[in-house]
Amino acid sequence: MPPKIINVSRVNFLVGSVLNAGFLGFVHNSKWDRRFLAGVRGGLAAIGAKEHLAVFEGASRLIDEAYTNGGKLDTIKFKAAVDQLERKLFSNLRLSWRTGWIVGNNWTWGERWQCAQILSARYIEKWQGVRYLPRPEYEAALDRIAERIPDLAARRQESEGAP
Image (cartoon, rainbow, N blue to C red; front, side):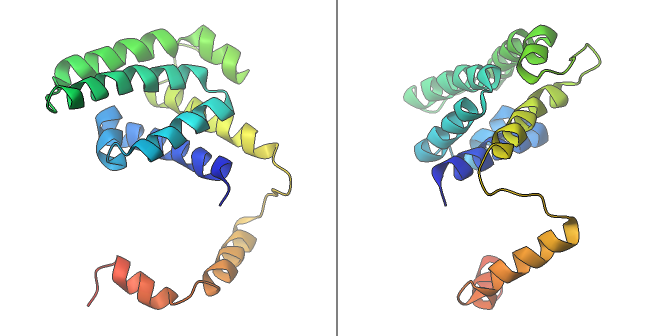
């Protein structure tokens, strides 16, 4: 799969993890893998999510410092620092300018993170050969792709932990 596709999916993984469990949830889910993190950075940069990338970089510095200092992270200070970054960088003005939408005080914290997904969708729209499929056609296309996977049943059984 081309890196640009992988990196955009990693941006969506970041947003989903943050929305479900905060930035520390993303740290746990990503296992703080350097290659994975590089993909997230690349994806955020590619889609033009400068504010999200800045929050990501600020939080990453704190996590990296904790790993350097024996893995000790003051989670209360960490969450406060990330909250401060988000308040500064996810301002109404910045996100309005970035997305072209009117972002107001009624936008939730989650919606501000989801701006990265808006930018991802716009980025993907520019790719050659990408087309929208209605749900039934999409599911059928996925089924056709899955049929070409060698030993699919065995792989599913293995991933589900079945004997």
